[in-house]
Image (cartoon, rainbow over all chains, first blue to last red; front, side, top):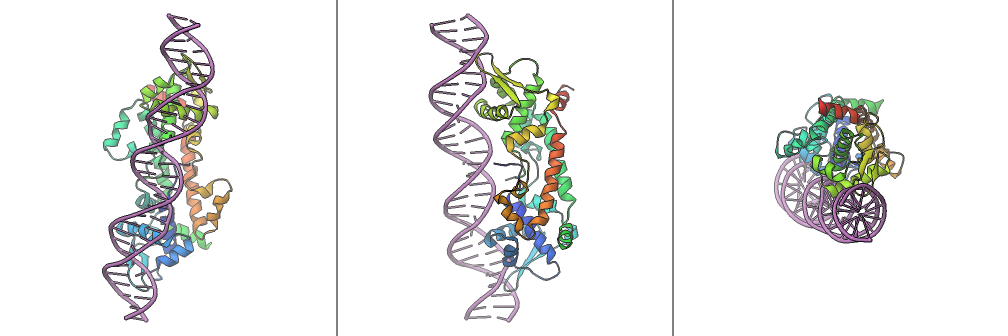
Length: 143
Length: 143
DNA sequence: GCTTTTCCGAGTATTGCGATAGGATTTATT
DNA sequence: AATAAATCCTATCGCAATACTCGGAAAAGC
């Protein structure tokens, strides 16, 4: 019903990365424990972590006592990084994306006027998401 | 594939209202002409205009030579007004909405920390959308 | 060798989007 | 009065994506 909304991919991704940030420096953290603490399906979270691993934000250790660790310090990973990996570009409409066939829409009268609106929305979203790091969230949690 | 995205309801709604703003003061504008100028399915646009009519942003005149007119001056209608009507509240996650059963998610560890992030995103989106009126778009189109 | 864990691909139920269809009603025009 | 133009209303429907679930293979500590 409500659009302009994050899917669980983005939400769970941020929650899981936040959880890893809280345990940063404690060795590999198993997805089982992350899933339990954050209230996420473990099997589903596996898929999401695969995306984050391929993007280079986490590394994994297989086998018993294995798990995931952040590849960078929590202060060097922003919420925007995670959202963009999990949900793709944060453009509110397709025609703001890189030039593709989608740009056919932009020849429409009126559309290119409203296009400026969507660009401003995108920029303001990115500004907020890029201003918050995992370290900020971890600090907020402790206080 | 891409979330945090507007559906066509919001985009078409803004485009149609922008079109009505361009023709404000010229009597009822038929959906047929709006749909042609903006490149929207006429029948689908009917449904969207029904939503805007029930919300009081446009009034309709039935019969031949009928159509739609804005109920307020273009300067008094913001893009945010239209988006909120067409897409529902612009909250990126459910738990930011008014207290409902959705708040069950908020007892989760970590979630209430990330909740602050989503609130900031929502506020920045609203600030942008509420700062732009249909008159702004119409002026931009003429220049 | 057993258990724990990541890794991988497939399948699936539900949902919402983006229409389309068909008609009923209203009103200006001829 | 007949016609055409337009809004209004309800229903349906294909498609794609979401949010999982399932089953198992592979790796590594114990």
